[in-house]
Image (cartoon, rainbow, N blue to C red; front, side, top):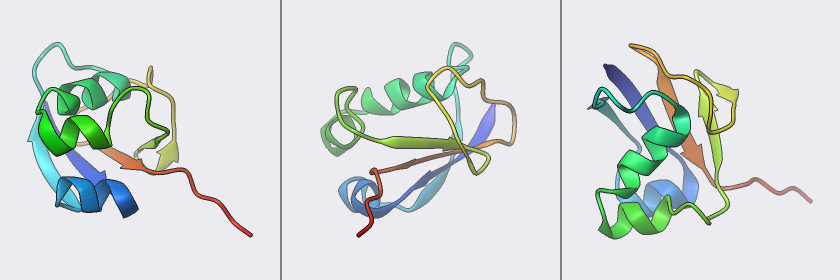
Length: 85
C-alpha cells in the first residue's frame, strides 16, 4: 500500500525531511503501526517518533489516534503538540 508521510516542526528537523511517499508492508494497517514501522528505521527516526514521546498524529488532515486504519493513497502526518499563549 502506498501512502504519503508528512513531518512537521521538530519532527521534520530531526528526520531531515518534510514528506515522503512510502510503500507499507502488508502488516502495517494503522497510524500507530506506521509510527512503529518508522521507529524501526532506527537513528533519528527512532528518537523522533519513539513511543513515549509526545506526538500528535493526523490521517488525511484529521487528528487521529494510533488505532485509525490507513488506506491506499492516504496521508499520515506527525508533529509535536502545539501550545499557544
